[in-house]
Length: 189
Image 1 (cartoon, one colour):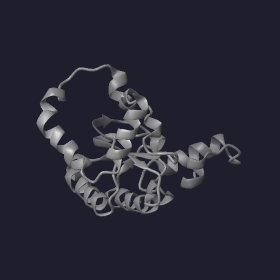
Image 2: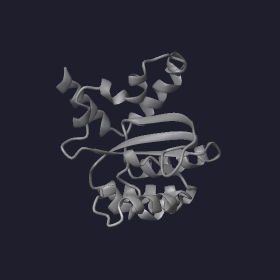
Image 3: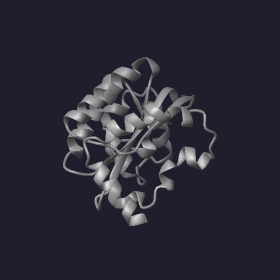
């Protein structure tokens, strides 16, 4: 059963009509799911219910990005992203939308608006996708969830008013930068 599911996901993932099918399902069945009470694991980790999720995108895997869109920019930003993805035939078979109202410090993922999370297969289109998304993040001053990020460039973190404060605090703890990560190197923290 698991390998059959994997095969179906691969076929669907390469299909241009998937977004249209999902939109049809959502429009016609959203009332059944809108106010459904579920366990927190199902809400926060929906992919865990899909067998072999890590194999859906093939051997190269996938990258995930999650960002926060303020309410007043939501429609404009999603339309721009949708047009780009359709034009370039880039598909995400897993998209999560959540309403967010969080306060926080430093570079944590907080704010008010709608959190959008996409999974994209790693392939030859990933570089144009990264470039486009970085342009969108900068253009609309969007917050990115750095725990799910393989895309954001150093130019986008300067949009965060907390970035310099975070960087100074980190340098106090790690002055010679003996401890680093790929993220800290990419963002030049």
